[in-house]
Length: 203
Image 1 (cartoon, helix red, strand yellow):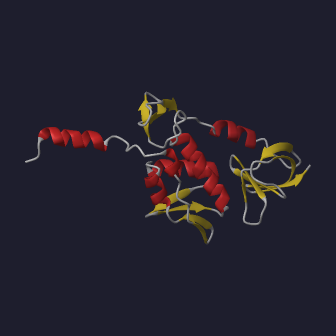
Image 2 (spheres, rainbow, N blue to C red):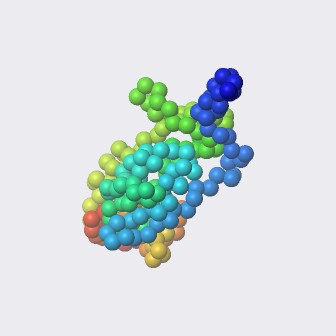
Image 3 (spheres, rainbow, N blue to C red):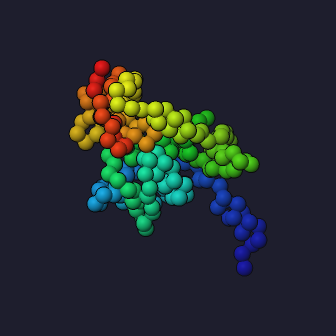
């Protein structure tokens, strides 16, 4: 029969996030993305959620909100309604990790999400730091709701599409900018809006 103390010790350890040797070893697995009819699939979705130690439902809820679509988990896959660029999904996953995984004090991923009343707290097991989880959606959606053809604005390029255009995510919209590279800030004019896609011209 197992020692009661050892059993309690094992139970306590099971509730503690394992501290990694170094933050540099933390690399989010590349999302395996492909189109399937009118949907976009992340084939290794559950593997990503397990690696970053977060509930798949929580990650899924964040991604459908960021992409402005509906979706569901099927086995190890996540399926989203609509066709999305790989860069847009990868960017959304990285934003999730920045907000809900990485400690802002020590930069490590050895964290847990805990509720303090109605506030969601990110608590770090490596350094003991903690902070409320940032919520950026309301501001982003408010600004994106005012977008219209002819609008001129400054945007910061987040990634590159398969065709080589710069990509910017603005609420439910994806903006494409020609001849732009990640990290560059450019002035553009919205020439056309088609569904959730913004086509632009450089100003």
